[in-house]
Image 1: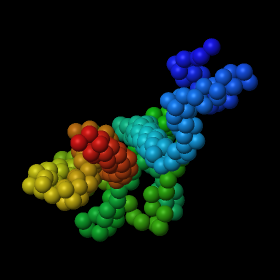
Image 2: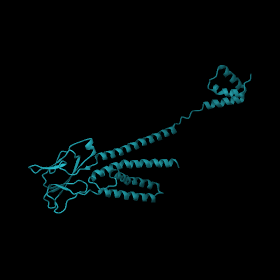
Image 3: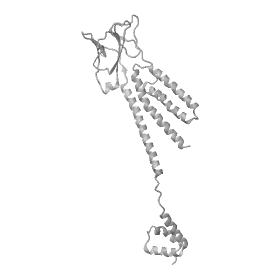
Image 4: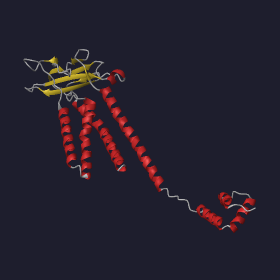
Length: 298
């Protein structure tokens, strides 16, 4: 019985893979000896079977490296956001809440040798002491304030105890207490330094100057970006510079809000700088990701 070519061609793939019985193999080979078309089909199948497999993994490695970079970038971004949240939380927990004066908050005691002590109550978390020489040079004027924090009240209640105000035997003419609310200072030791009217300790405005400088720099950088929008290299450099004052502005708003006056300017300034650094890194990551996305879609 003569077998049709269509049947043989259906069997050829199994024949090439040596997956047929001995009888079927003989039938296929007898047919191939007589049929040129099926023989040619068989040769093509054997040729394709023996073709070398493409083992070039360059594309796969490139994709793997890209996925790793994206994953690494996502991890770094998450870490930076965690740092920002942590800084805000620490700032909230340790932010000074200034305490109005009472004898339980701070009391002045004098020893026989002239040493003057300030005894702080259990509620006090921290204090600030400023001193300066009197106009006639006869002694020093002190201004003291105290504060409490959420951290001290709820987590780490630590008593400050007693502080020596004149460890080197300085003469103290007056000691004032200020509550950091704009009200008049309270004389708690010595004599008043004014004949008429009271004494008021005002907050420092240095943070306002820094905030204004940051705004001006941001505006200048934006103008430069507009002017140099056709110059890619200059635009990229200006953009990186722009992120610096912008990060400071956001850091200032996170720490101080829209209030720029401060009785603890140094603490607030360092807190602003500390949070501005991760904010700047966030800007850089977002900018680079946007540029790559834009480049891939062009």
